[in-house]
Amino acid sequence: MRSKGSQQIYYAGHSVIVEYNQPIIEKILSAIIYPFPTSNQNKNPSILRVEYLDGPDPTYILFLEGEQIYKSKHLVDFAEMLLSKICYQLAFYSKDGVLFHAAGLGYNDKGILVPGGIGFGKSTFAAWMISQGCDYLSDEFVYFPWESHEMLSFYRPLHIKKPSRKVLDNIINYDDNNDLMMVGSHSDLIHPKLIRPNNHYYQPPVRLILFPHYKADSELEWQELTPGQTGLELMQFLINARNLPEYGFSEISRLARSTEAIKFKYSNFGQLANVLKIFLR
Image 1 (tube, rainbow, N blue to C red):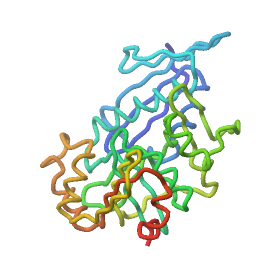
Image 2: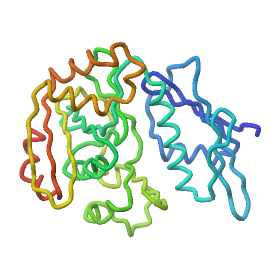
Image 3: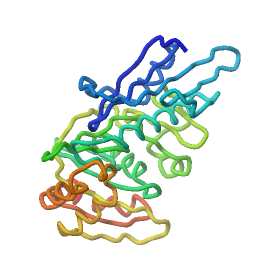
Image 4: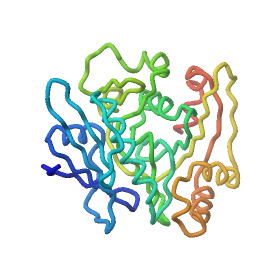
């Protein structure tokens, strides 16, 4: 395939170059990764290549380092896979700081870090927090350069799985055919401005760490963490430990000592309404 264009994405100490043969792929990239600095260069970037086959039944083919890894005729499913592979490559080679699997939120120019794994309801919780007045920064990655408190969040759409639609139907109008929403087979990509029209991206200092865990039919359980407890929780969601000196332990300790943290379990957002002022005080 002869490339018609390319886009370099630099984040968390690594870069990915996406090459493509048709301008439509550039539009897809602009819909799944929002503007953030891409000026830094990397000597060994990961190379993704997209081939778009036009016709009555268009096809999208994705290559990694020259090997075909995915093929689809569904635009949104392909966009999700492309975003997933970009994120994986960035995370796998991340260095020069600590990278967390976490959502990033902003409130009054201060940062809220929301670490979480698969099934913790991290993206759904982030969507609710946006509806309550927070700025959305990411629902996937938050990166702290070495010895920094600045949250460098990976600015991308909210990735909302289908089961969360019922939970968010009073926040997101799924019946509206809106350009800010991409509906996939298993999940949706939601632009934060669909929830918060004046949402803006910035890189605030972290001031609060929240560890939410959704569990159906549970009572609200609440625990303010000590620095030691915070460090142990953070280690669970550190993605790039293998690439860091001391596996990132010293940086985890530094962040844990200087940042308030709360761990809680909940089953519905009504339980959180009365304690939101504690989150945002």
